[in-house]
Length: 270
Image 1: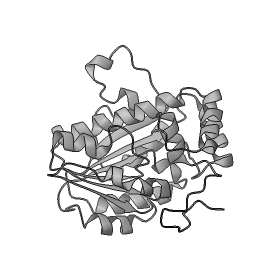
Image 2: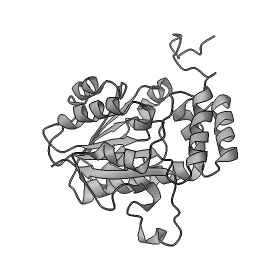
Image 3: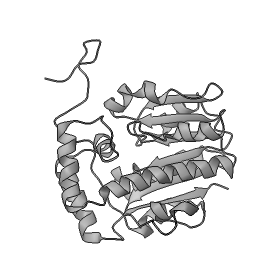
Image 4: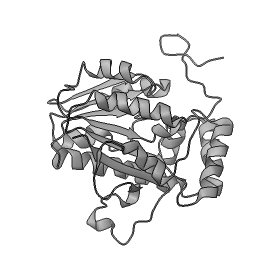
């Protein structure tokens, strides 16, 4: 029997199939996951223990990129697609701590994330935080809804962390990015993080195979060149597409950081 919502209506949350958002939440130390997610998380961690480092580095990458966009680029609007379950240092928390008037729109299609939308909607009094229940594969629908909160004639930080890797076809990814970026103003920035096989090809594809056998949505691994190609037509900021842990680390991190198999980059639309 399907779990039910407080109103008594059947929910769409399937607790029998591992789900990316919930497994990621487990690796980050969250509690919004089910036994099936923890089982899958431990299965992957058994042969790829660094996966937890990937998750932590990805979150730290989010903090540093949002901080850069607000402080150095003057961005005050963010469209965060595939946001996942709320943890510490969500996009709106980082942005509004630096610019209280920042406006953030989250997009996800996972029903458990939707159930936590109220947590995401708690932002600063001066700013705006909103949530859209939509899929990355519907960029036109996302833009139509986002335009109700964001002024698309002004720069937007487009955050695609750990989500493009769930679209296998490169041409489909290109079409999605072209649609989203085509609607955004010059001065907007694209931020992407994506699992790569550049560091350990065999184990990276072992993770994907284990994930895709039981988990959802299906995972695609790309090379560094494949990830860099996602930024075609934009001005890629230094240091380019690198391990998330190596993208402009804080001085206090120098000497302690290690590359992780999660690459990221930031690029400007001119």
